[in-house]
Amino acid sequence: MRLPLSIAAIAVMLAFSPNVVMAATKTAKECDAEYAANKDAIKGSGQTKKDFVASCRAGSEVVPGGAAAAAPASVAPAKTTAAGGVKTAKECDAEYAANKDAIKGSGQTKKDFVASCRAGSEVIPGGAAAAAPATVAPTATAPAAGGGVKTAKECDAEYSANKDAIKGSGQTKKAFVASCRAGTETIPSAQSTTAAPQPAKPATANTAPTVAPSKNVQAKTTAAPAATTAPTGANQFATEAQAKARCPSSTVVWVNLKSKIFHFAGNRNYGTTKSGAYICESDATAEGFRAAENEKQPQ
Image (cartoon, rainbow, N blue to C red; front, side, top):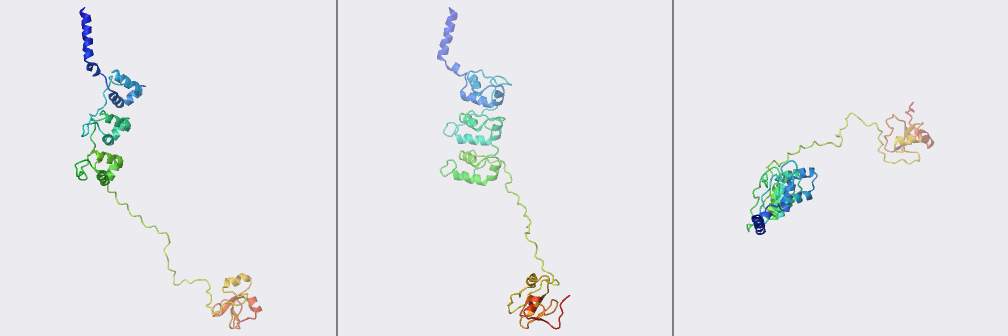
């Protein structure tokens, strides 16, 4: 009869002490964090997240390659806001930005990290919980007159003052401003942001230099006479080439329209009289012009 009484006593104790049983089970958020910390090993064993979380809630989860229910690499202690609540989305975004490489390297997505951060169970692999950012920027501008958080304009100014260093760390302006508003902005180790001046490119000449012609070189073209009277005849031309085109196999002469006398090439009067024209010799003879008496037709 004493054995049933002992069982009854235990049943009564359990009925009035539910915390004895409840304290042993994990919450869904705790199991999510444990899965995130051991994601690669769990997936490699063929377990789905759903199955792992279910076994974790039951206290029978198995993490391949280690003891059952392996503790996550490092669990960040829950941080609260000034009002005593859980972290805001902006605070979690800033924490993700400060530890982006380590978090991505563990296989966690930003969405999963922010969700666990909001729950106060975020995991940052390879370091103490919630690893501190590399360098915390000093306040670039005075805080708001009311003593509150920085304004968007103040954070924009802080971003502009450290733009190169911030962009070089992979942070976007949006993420930096969000963390600045939350008071957790990060400015990576100072590096020289002054770009070395680019050497000036030598000017490329697009045109050849102008070379003055030698004084001893004379143009071979025959200058047109400074005629005061234009050619009037049908077969009279202003240039030797025009006349030559009319009679390519005949002789071209220069006729003085005033004296009616024509001159052969090589004579000092050829192409030089004030009133004259180039004409084929046969046309000059036909039109009544005569050759100069002291000139002979060139051979």
